[in-house]
Image (cartoon, rainbow, N blue to C red; front, side, top):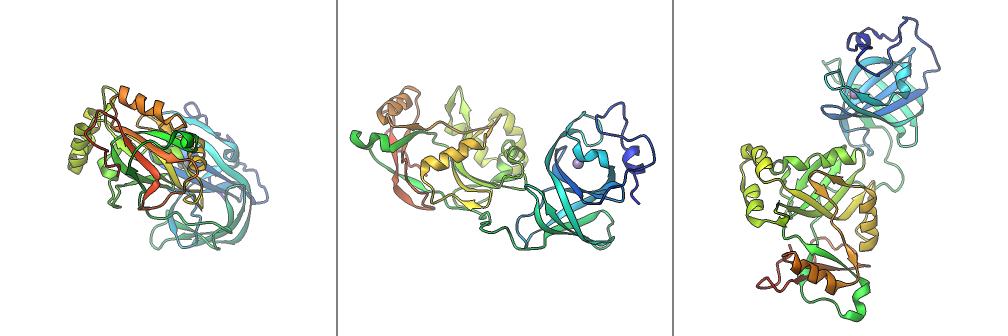
Length: 366
Ligand code: MN
């Protein structure tokens, strides 16, 4: 039989909008309803709840359900929740247990294959949660469980690669005017190239040599929370703006800071991440897709935050974009062929770095 005493002990019905059934009598269903809530609490996690014996047996999974069978993820067993919780979404006020925003990530039916104190094996039939999963109680700790996918990944699912070497531009001139509309143009931000990998709501940052730089830029970690369970590999640049212009010296101070200083420098020299390409998205490599399609998918992610923003790209009118870059005192622009594939680690003719007249020579667009 489920037990709601711990659930009630942690909550004050006058302070939280969460459902708190008054009586001790619990509704009893068919043990086949599940809900998964995305919970942006002090630390992002997904609450997986399975109807069982009149309550929702619950696990908090910090990175969500894995998509591939070879990954075990932590699943912290939490107190039983009332069945009414299966439809709960909303804002738990600051200061209350579980304070933060809760949304329903998925809900639906599930089947039970095994259920005991050590192993709970189920099949999810949801929209997003699908297939067979095993929750395994780790030895010696009642609350620490692990969850893994107990069948192969969905058909066609491609694993998120650990890293992809960035493509770079060749220094050169604007494309011929007759070909202008086959090209898109972006400003050259002259920043630090960075690949951002998001999985399980966590962002990991790498420089162009695959060295991890996550701890250098603490203000960019929240990109992970914004993407939630969306798996993505972004390519872009980290830029320190001062008076509206990219400032190499300020960026340099951030790049060379010791880990202990990194947090303090966030206030003095905050950075922006400007993602301008999307290399992998939700189980599919996007490298072979044309540039404009990758840009479309990137726009659909709706990435915008205090320290990140998808920079504009302009199709055609390279000359005007170059003049605008000059007016704004930028190093140059990058012309990208609208139909070009992404070529990892290559300096491809599909991307051309065009310097503004104010700079001594073409910038090395790494
Ligand atoms: Mn939670």
